[in-house]
Image (cartoon, rainbow, N blue to C red; front, top):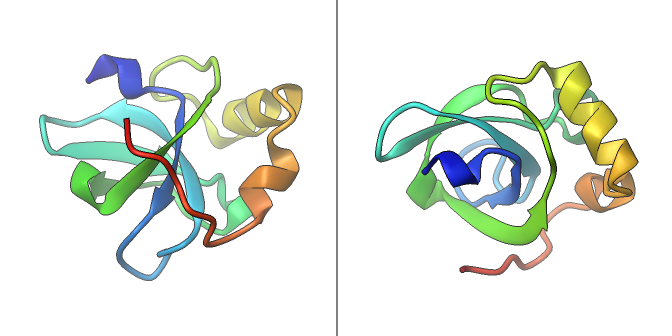
Length: 94
C-alpha cells in the first residue's frame, strides 16, 4: 500500500464527501492518512478508511508524511490545482 502515497482521490463518505484529497501516509491495511490540503480543497488532514476513497489516475511525487505546504507545492507543479478545487467529479477505480 506504500504505492498509494501521493495518489489523488475523492472522498466518498463523511463531511468531506465529494472533496478531493491526497494520500500522505499508510496507517495499516485499511486506514490511510489524507490531506486536501485544507487551504485548497477544504479537506483537513485525517485518517480515513481506504474503502471510503475513490482513487483517481493522478499521482504526485511527495514523501511519506509530507506537510500540507509540500503537498500544495507538488499539486501546483503538477498542474492539478484547479482540478483539486472542483468537487464531486467521478473518479476511477484501478
